[in-house]
Image 1 (cartoon, helix red, strand yellow):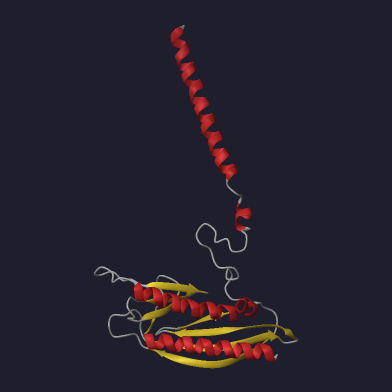
Image 2: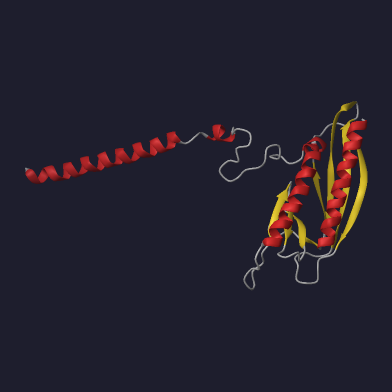
Length: 225
C-alpha cells in the first residue's frame, strides 16, 4: 500500500512545480508593457536600442511630402555646388565620385502656403546616383555630425593590423565615415554592400561650405515666400 503512494506523490509534486513555473512566466509577461504602449514613448526617450532623435523617425518631412501621390507639386531647385570627390592615396576607404548639393522648395500647385523646404544631396559613385533629402533643421544636424565624427576620428587609436577602423555617423540613410588621424573618409548609403565614395579632408571642408550656403538659401527663400 505504501509503494502505491510514491508515484502519486511524485505526480503531485510535478504538477505543483509546473504551476509555479507558469505563474512566474505570467508575472514576467504582465510586468512588460504591451507593444503599442512601448511604441508610445515620451518625446526624447531613446528606447531600448537608442532609437532616433525626436523628429527624425521617418526621415525628412520634405521627402514624405514629395512622395505623396495624386497631385501636382511645384518644385524649385537651387544648384548650390558640386564636389569632385578624391580619396587620399594612402589606403583610405572609398572610390572616386562626385557630390551635388541643392536647395529645394516645394509646394502644392494650388496651395502655395502648403510648402516644404530642404536640402537635396546627390551622391554619385561609379555605378549609380543616390539622392538624400534633409529638412532645414537636419542640415544643422548634418553639420554637427560632420564635426563630431571628425573629432572622433582624430582621437581614435590606430587599429591592429588588417583591421579597418572608422568613426561613422548616419542620417536619413546617408553614412559618413572617417578613418583615424585625418586620413580621409567616405560617404555611402547605409548598408553593408553599398559602394562608398571617398573624400579627402579638403572634400569634407568643401562639403561643409556648401551645406552652410544651402542653409542660407533656404532661410532666404522660405522668408521671401
